[in-house]
Length: 378
Image (cartoon, rainbow, N blue to C red; front, side, top):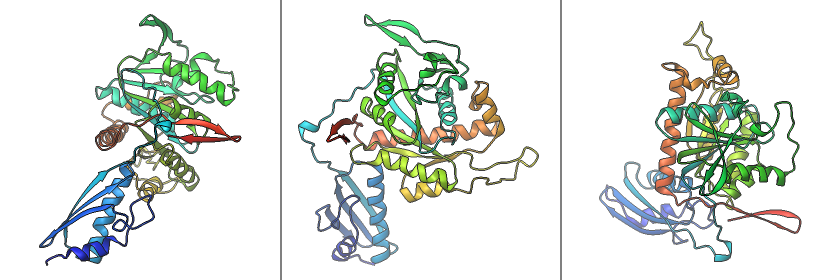
């Protein structure tokens, strides 16, 4: 079949570029359409730099041409990002930490879904893979990383760097760790307002001798709030990983977590969603899977939100036990748990590579206060 250029254009008029109201032809997003025989090449320019917008644009074009013109058409879509130049008054100076290549935020909309456990096991898996890794425990009100790394009784030492005294992170299992838990007693509640918490975080970020790291994982508190904004104001986050369990209550909050990062004023790329406690397999019935919290809920949410699904982790008693004794389960060798965390971590690394290849560096956001309301700007 010989394709017709006008048929292609008419089909493309039925869809819009993500975030724009007018169809992609009349808006001028479609720059060129070339047809020959059963092949078509579409050149399109979009202003949204997110990887999700690029993927959605390509998928929409492929689907529309196949449905409305010719289902066997061979289609090439060339998506170019041409983000508008921001006024100089809104340019934000990020505060990258020298020597750190990627900063990955690990978040959850809801508490109790295993976010810190996932963070700890991703960190030790990255270390086992040969990467230099650090964790910033930003869960100010419930720091648990020191327990999971068996360093509760440790304290950061002072180290002189370029004539300045810096905190030296505590290290175990090849992972450098800083947490507010190092500066409070186990029975002491941290009762701080937002500015105090933000100041403590900034000290752990910028007054620390992190050295050279391939990955700094930031273990965020549950929900979406002050601490999250403070972190994104202080650091240019490479991307975010959202952890959820499969049940609807957790998924509703995970959806809000993804939406927070995708806000136009924040625009932190979402690397994907992790489904924790996906199923339970009794030791005596290892081939049986019981979906205690529901089946594939986080995977379906990732598809709905058009973000990558990074993988699922089983509900296994030994993962909890390993965290409680300060020896992350991923350190075990030749076990299904180790393989599950390896696969998950490999997917995260791949998404970081994709993000760094296809998108410009993330900027720290700027937070201002106007008329008594908090405003977030790029």
